[in-house]
Each structure stands twice: as structure tokens, then as C-alpha cells.
Image (tube, rainbow over all chains, first blue to last red; front, side, top):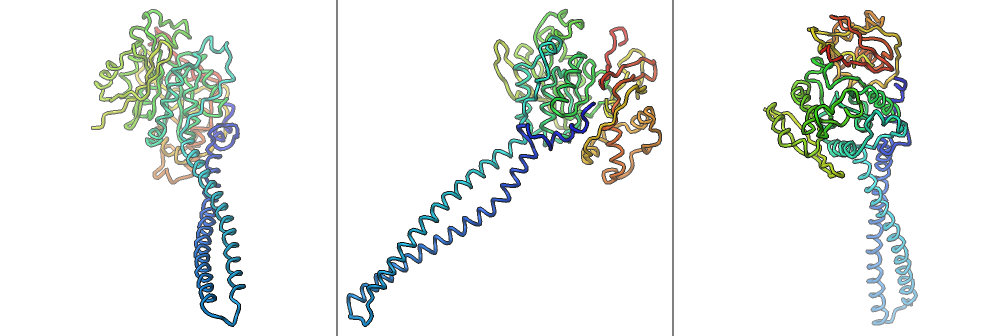
Length: 341
Length: 124
């Protein structure tokens, strides 16, 4: 790998990433630094205003009383001028008061803005940015599946699961059939260096392209060119914490799954579109760690109820986490977890 | 291919192979990439690693006796040990060479850092 150094700095260096954890935590830090000062200012303004209001009432009372006194009895001192002075003072207090009011309004605005920013930065860390694929050309896509609706639905599904995924603290993430590498790269960018990412593809071109996509996006993926998890068995047993599979799901004739045509292998799914995924299901209970979670993309024709039943026979419980109609395809992402006993 | 990846690969899927692990490494090109040390992650990963196979891989690459033969007790708090594990698992990469089945001698080529573990139909 050429960019070992950049692999690890990706998390805390570059400025051209939309969700840059460093920037986010910096923003948060600055906001948190400013917040007490702003709060303090606001409080003192509030207090000043309150005492000014009190002072104003006192002055009003005093001047009223003084006028009463001056009217009722002849005084050796001319109270009129003092009353005028007091009324003058009251005017000035009113002016200062409105200035303070303005200041407070502005502080309120700052307050709202900073709250908004803090709100924005928090979920930022749980967002999956679509990886940069500008290094790939139409020539690459002659042999490698070009990301389409299904790839983006998987990314959206994983994004919605990030808080959960973080909660299980994955150590080993595995994607089978990585193609362009878009999904695992996106996930790796989001989860960072707390996890190792393995990518499998039966198509050597896809394996290379996945590697390139990882480099391009400054993440480190461990790419293996193989058929499902064959050469990882039995070593991978009980080790996979997060498994992602966007299989060839299109229902085709069995003989359309042609090892000679690599691009066909990326989508041709045989009968009900199930041939390839059905080969993986039996090994799921073996390879997954106790808290492991498995995400699978399917289309309606794959028969989700039947897939749920197959997985349930291994004690794995499935649910639909996202679905989307894309042209003729009705896509869904399923999530599977071990039934806790 | 990091040694972390090598740690998971077997040739057991080949016909007639009973263990197929660990695969021997004959390296033509090895790279060392500096990677940020993440002790918490390495501690978690060590629980998933076959240590004897890692030692053997290190030996294949000419680093005999650089790793302790066993995972040390209380490794989570042993920075020196974790740094060594980090170096061998994450930083050393075989860019080109072969992985060799210990039972049949079948070679699996590693090209540009990617191991090709595909077996022909008549091999499985």
C-alpha cells in the first residue's frame, strides 16, 4: 500500500472532506469555549437591566413624591430643578435600557446560532459521505459494477445505522462483493481507525478498483480476491462484527452466472436472484462474532419472507431497515442479528 | 497485504487439504507503511489474531525472534508489546510475492498488495 501515512491521517488532517471530525470537534470546542462567556455576558446584562428598571421606578416615585411635597407646602429650597434632574436621569436610563435590550437581542441570536452549530456538528460524525470515485472511468466500469441505486441505498442504510454500529464497537468489518469499493470506503471514512476493513470480490478488476477507491479516499481497506469467504474459513470464525453484502440479486437463468464474464457476475443472481446469497447464508452463523450484525441488500423478487425463514432456521432474526423503489427494482436492505438466548 | 490479512487466509478450501494454515509467505516486495498507533484497537484485534501464525509470517519475512512467542499477560497495558503487534499486523505489507499452501505447495500470488485466493473449479 502506498499511502499508509495518509491512511491514518485521513481522520484528522484534510480540509476538503465534508465531515471532518477534527473540524467538527474544533467547532464544538470553540463553541463550548465561547458559550460560558456569552452566558455570563447575558446574565450581567439581564441583571443590569433589572436594576435599571428598579432604579427607574424609584426615581419615578421619588419625583412624584417631590412634586406632591412642592405643591403642598412652601419649601425653602426650589424642588422643581431637582425634579427636572431626576426626570432627566430617568430619560437617560431609558436610553441605556434600550441599548442593553439591543445587546441582549444580539446575544440571543448568537445563542441560537451556536446551538444550531452544535446540533449540526453532533450528527455530522454519524454521517457517511459519498466517497470520491473521480479516479474511475468508463473503462473501469466495463469490468466492474458501477455504483447505482442499490449501492446508494446500502450507504443510506448503513448511515441510518451508524449509532447502532458504533454501539457494538466493531473490530472487523467485512464486505463481500465490494465492486467499486464505494460502500466499504464510505463506512471506513465514517468509522475511522477503530476498526479493520476487509473487502472481498471474486472479480480481480473489482479488487483492484476497490483498492484504488480506498487510496483515493485515504482509507485503508484489506482487499482479497476470492469467492465469498472460502479462503477465510475457518480462521474468520466468530470474528466478523459487521458484514455487508450487496449480492448479485437480479433473477436470471442459472447459466447466466458465467465465471467468464466478470461484469455479469456482479449482478446475475440465478433463480429468484438467490443463487449467490443462498451460498453465503449457511456460513453466517459461523463467521459472525457474538454481537455481529449482517446487512444484506435484496430486491422484492428475492423473497424476503423466505430469506427471513432461512436465517431464522439458523437463529438469526431479520428485519427491513430501509426500502426504495428505483425504476423497475424494489430494493430493500435487511438487517440480521443473532437471536439472543 | 498486511500480515493481519494473512492471519485469516487458509487453503483449506482446496481438495485434499486438511488444515492449510498458516500459508507460507515468499515475498518479492515488502513495504512498511507508518500507521497511527491505536492501542485500544490493537488490544481488541489481538483477541482475534492467531499469534503463532503471525510469528511465523514475521519469520518468513526475515524477522525471526522479533515477536514474543506468545501473547503476553496483561497485554492491554503493555505498550511495548502492543506497538510490536501494531507494527507487524498493520504496518508491514507484502506487495508482491506468493502465499504457499503448507500441504500441497499450491501458490497463491500476491499482486500490488492483493492476494489472489481464487481456486480453479477442479481444485475445490
